[in-house]
Length: 214
Image (cartoon, rainbow, N blue to C red; front, side):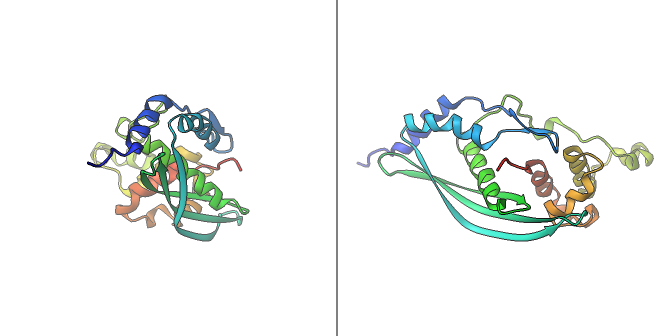
């Protein structure tokens, strides 16, 4: 008879002990709060030690490209597909594969991408809550001036992908900075170029974008 694998009970036990990790770090440049990598590691490290769990990273795939902002500044854009394997004492393990994206004007783009990937692997594998989590269905983006000018019939119809992406950029960065952040984050020069079937994934990319501390 096969012995039960320890990793399952170890992860379940760890989940019961971690608790909330709040968004206590603030990006002052873009004016939003986030859960920093240090906060995540500080919360997880004692719980992982107690439950005899360790995590090993593996870069499955990497894509890098140089992008230029509307102001002529150069940024390195890095996308990493990361595999994180959670091990228990008996060698049993489970893995999570996630995507991490990061941008930097120097040599930290991949570091930032790995930090983002690790955070979200842990958030989702261990179901770590924040005290201000909001369901995406709980919010409706404010209608734009152009939509209001077309009357009630237009405002009752769903927003197309371009409008949704534009609203996400404005919400994240403000009206002044939104245009210059579109291309570095998405690779599209105009929201009108965004394919309808990619709008949701691009909005998620915008919402998750952060300049992580080096």
